[in-house]
Image (cartoon, rainbow, N blue to C red; front, side):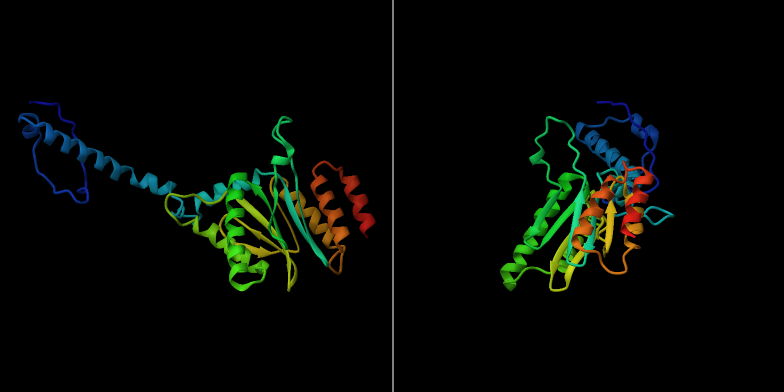
Length: 268
């Protein structure tokens, strides 16, 4: 049986394959059995896979982009966070406030089914900006970690430790094959022996303690507004003031500059 031959050149042998030297005339003018033809097709497919490897590496989550040194998938995850609704947190002298916008995609959606703030333990809550399904996965993992700690030590898990464990999960998804980073940033608020605490956890797995922070679509304006308000206080604000500030910060995108200045004048 004679079959047409697909000419393929390769610079290096495919791993696990022996190199067969054969001229074009030998390939074109000798009979090829069905089994041998299948082997040739399989070899061609493997060569194509090797040639496409550099492109797949560029898209892989664990490959650093040259020459910037950035992980491209983390940049995409941060873009998802920046496209989410604005969320913020403020640490007060006697508590922590977390708040978020809650815009329904349609008037047909049941409002009670959209929950952007979740309770992890009786003394720890969390809010997010970004992808809701990713948030639910992290909430489930964080609750499981808190439950394991309580079962072992018979006491609530400290805020810092729960944040650290959650950040470790998010970081693991930045260097593992077959997965992608979580497309969410979290604001974790809690109260323990160290007092009120507020942490922000990003898709890279990095986390920091904040006096006040914001994330989402309006993050730049929200942080600017929070910074201006906090400069008015020589000490931590009271919880009632923090609640008022959080509401105004969420409204900052629709308030006029004059209304913002009026509020800041009242704070002074």
